[in-house]
Image (tube, rainbow, N blue to C red; front, side, top):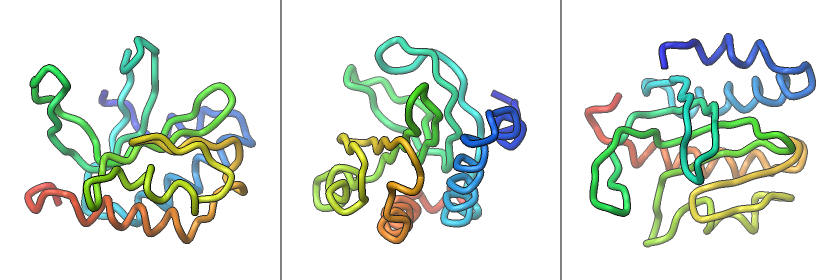
Amino acid sequence: TEKNPSAYIESLPTERREEMSRLDALISARMEGHSRALWVGTFWGGTEQTIIGYGDITTTQSRGRKVAWFMMGLALQKNYISLYVNAVQNGRYVSEAYGPTLGKVKAGKASISFRRLDDVNLEVLAEVLGIARDQMPESAG
């Protein structure tokens, strides 16, 4: 969408706005030189989502169709914050590999969810973000 990610963050409730602003700043700094855009729509599982996407990539869906997507995504859910990390290291999604060292989080194949930013080890998260940035295609920056 053409909507501004910063305006979206400013529209959030105060407590969540502060956490989302801190995460946005961290991710933006790590992904400097790459795109930052708001994705709004019905995504996986048929759920309506608003996601700030960082870094343009092309990925292949399970049925073989190529689609535009993002390397990193940041979304505010009803009860938690989600990060989507589309980076792989040594044949494993980095969110899954680093999950046990990220703090009080739920880590899936390409997602990291947590209730509060204070629950996350930000040094480890910065390392995960660096891996994702380093996997960006050369032409994307």
